[in-house]
Image (cartoon, rainbow over all chains, first blue to last red; front, top):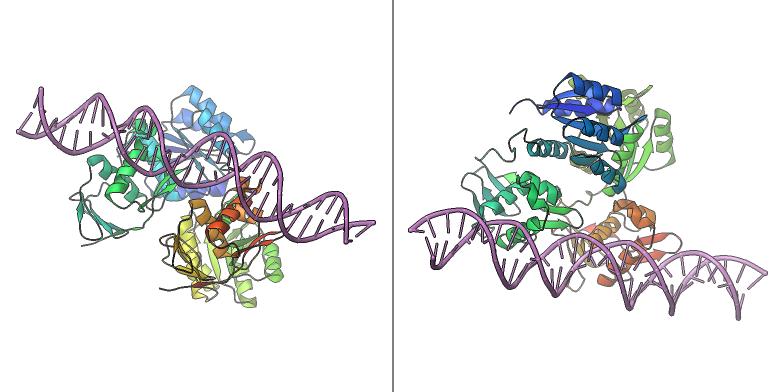
Length: 234
Length: 234
DNA sequence: CGGTTTTTGTAACAGTATGTAACGAAGCGC
DNA sequence: GCGCTTCGTTACATACTGTTACAAAAACCG
């Protein structure tokens, strides 16, 4: 994986420093900008793979800036906001943001979103579950990543289709975190699937083959793996 | 089990709002202070179970404040800092902090630390959390937090919708304490719900499915869970 | 006390979201 | 081609949840 260049546009210096520190630790190259002017300057001076853009930028308006950047060039943008109000969210999408995340966010979730957007933009390979040499336990079930085997609490072995297995791995990579259908589709590298009810069906089938209570529905949001995941180490 | 009172001392208003929103959603009573003076005032004016103290407080020094509070009374303190440098950490522990966490932190991790410190301090039993395998008893009823199951006194099992369960958890986290509709809505992370009569309906439906006398109406105020809550430990 | 106002309980309704059966297209091994 | 599996679409049933409307209860006030 090449070094991804991220432009973080955030006017709160403390917040910016925190996020930058975290993201750099995760192996990303982070450039900071604290204003519209700074962001545009940074965009001109070098390659940028992804922009993390705060909606509230003091005087400047993040939404307007997003539209402006979008009009000029094709760089993926994730909007960040302290408000989760829907109109803000819609405003973010309307101007072409690729994703949206509300503070306070789970840093890991932010990273997952960043990866998803980068992957969608064709700038990075899929990052979910590369390590195949592990056995995971979740709610009495086992998943052997090496053999792609799923074992029920009673010891029965369940056979999942490739797609069902992929879905399970998405959930296993994000336990207890609600995933929207869009996020799931993105993680499956199949943005089309987010359109219809394909994800619903997929989840339904996985539920049937495993345990309906394993995957909980978050109404209006998506689905969550309702169990913690631990390494089995055996 | 009583409501846990948390004093959040943080001078960055945005950060404070984010953290407070998250913690309140988890069933904690959060008081905000943005300065040394504010923190001390809040400490005098009411019971506080735990202090979340930001090290960087503009003019004021969080480390010194920690020492000062510690000298005066025995309240657990978790230091929060943008820096994870070891000497900072040691400085925090040196003046009596019970734990130390660096930004950016995973919210769930923060909650885990809070729970751990509260438990260590013997203030109260652990918080209600889906990941905990706790079973709660209240007025003959049982709530299994792990399975999200509610059992009636006769042994019947009742199925609640997601929202009803969320409401029940809000009450279980605040037994015998009257909650306004606004507080309930805030705890449900749905401020819109405070507008109309959505909360009324929600309470009505929970009453129907459980026991009408479990939740008492405080006319002009809101609703109370009219039963004490204990851990079942089985 | 009786009338008025405020507050709450709840039935009925509606809009939306979700579960799932049934179907059919596509792929695959033979 | 044929039988099989996989998987998305459609269609419909069901479930969830907020709104409205009105009745009941409580509070208020002369």
